[in-house]
Image (cartoon, rainbow, N blue to C red; front, side):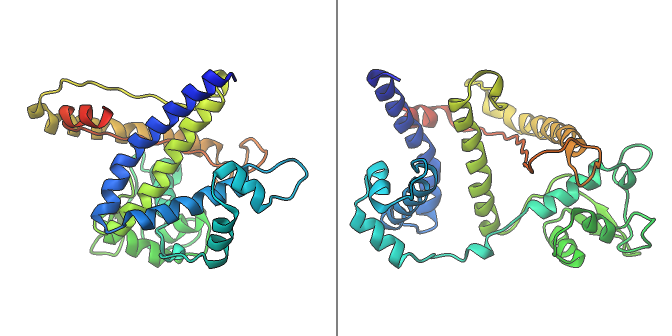
Length: 285
């Protein structure tokens, strides 16, 4: 790439980072995360990425090399590596993947659906030949007890218990409804995946690019928003269920005849946003 082209890409990337940081910094300030704390965090991430992704072939990564690619001095790198502490308990971050996979299998696996294609109301536990909630969680694997999964789904309102103790699915998606900590953890996972997909498309244009589509209108009357949100929510849920079936067919845990190869994960997301147009114009400028 030419020097002029590289300069243009760098400027575009800085502008993109500025746009990304606006909503993130708003959340950080709202939760008491100061700039010095963010600055320290940014340095840690620069060091992690520089160490992992910018090595030279057949050479051990050194502090000097990391300093060169990140712009952080070797002294600071050493200080951060020696005195690095995690202000938050990483193990306490929400892993909502299990609950999501449980619901995904419930709405996409034939044995958990009635003849009309609707999720069955499941007894909590039965014999191995009869669909049950315990069997459903067991199909996913992992070491989290089915009762803990049920308690979590009950807590967020995704399922309900009948008078007989059977489990009925109320929501076709796992959406933490109460805890800000859970929603913030999802922000970290989902936003990172979205940015990673766009970054892939920057480096791999054409046939190797990932799906990346957006529909955008900037003159919607505010009175239309309630109905618009309802319709988009319905269409998004239908889309997610279709994608669930497509991905499930290729999942080797569920389909023993699925193609082989290195273990990979596939993620498809959908989101909706409405915001004041003048506010968007200010942020863009």
